[in-house]
Length: 132
Image (cartoon, rainbow, N blue to C red; front, side, top):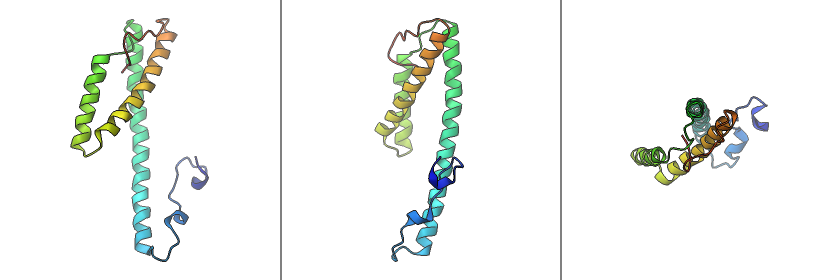
């Protein structure tokens, strides 16, 4: 939550941030508000997509722990990074950024998988670098 959203949990574009310079016309202000509203909607969608992804990875972690599998699958990680880099290139997104983003997500997945393994008495040994 921010001060700008009135505590509603979603930050809204503040018209005061649009600049008070005379050179910024009403149409430019309206367009900026429209674009920021779209960005806000996309951010919300990303949060929901990440939540769904983590629900799936939690299930993977429980399955691995139940079958005493290591939380890491380095071969899958390499394949997924390569796949994401190709997708990023096709979408005209910087592949290095996409890889950093995936690595950030993987770090969180690893933490979850180790915690699940610990809860199941599997010790959380990773048998490799990271998990999915």
